[in-house]
Amino acid sequence: MSDVILLDGGMGQELVRRAGDRPTPLWSTQVMIDHPGLVQAVHTDFFNAGATIATANTYAIHHDRLAGTGMETAFETLHKSALSEATQAREAHGAGRIAGAIGPLGASYRPDLHPTPEVAVPLFAEIARLLAPSCDLLLLETVSSVAHARDALAGARETDLPVWLSLTVSDRDGTQLRSGEPLEDALGVAGQADAVLINCSAPEAVTKALPILARVGKPFGGYANGFVQITDDFLKEKPTVDTLEARRDMGPRAYAGYVMEWVAAGATIVGGCCEVGPKHIAEIKSRLLAAGHSII
Image (cartoon, rainbow, N blue to C red; front, side):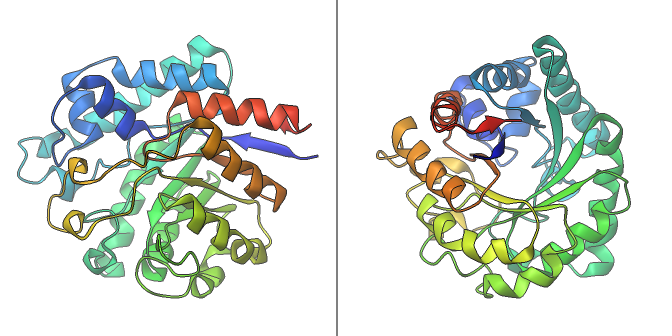
């Protein structure tokens, strides 16, 4: 039996659902601005469901995301707000770690928008330095190309925190990054991380990707999304998540079934991404404990 780290679920989609507001290009950042305290409430519910890590609501706080929104000068303030809500939730819960999330530059699933290393590395480093004092680790999420992985790791390594690299693969073929590059092409770069994961991909694709990740020789795992698939309409400038459709076959029991397959294949870090809520995490916890695993 294994010691398994249980991540939380998808903060952004959970916030959008609870707020009931029409999504904007700022996504979870907009909800945090408009509904103070809601981020903390979501963190609390994930902790109560069994998660041992709170992923800070910092994924989408980038200068490029804020451009043209009137929030351009709030970059540091928004990071502090997200970290404060995560910290308060952890203190109230009495245990747990905080992961500082760093999402893609430009847009999710758009490796074509990733800038040159001369531009990208300082931007990732700036965020890493903002997150480091309040976090236990840095989580580089939805990394869709080898260049993105290389630059995000270079920026994050300007702090002393552990860095987890989370790649995203094609929903149709889990052996390929969303850039079209073979997943195995990222293994050399991934070896520089302290753990390697797959996120925001279909659970079936995660299952296919994990044997490749296992070759890195680092702790590995996955946390999938519950979307039907990433649509072409979503791959445009300033997209909003209401163009995506949630799968109807991905309730807590079904999703936990995939997670247990990943653990059986050697994964020791699991959780959920978009459309995975506290009930899913609670089911995963129950299944892990029933199978004799320890949650750490």
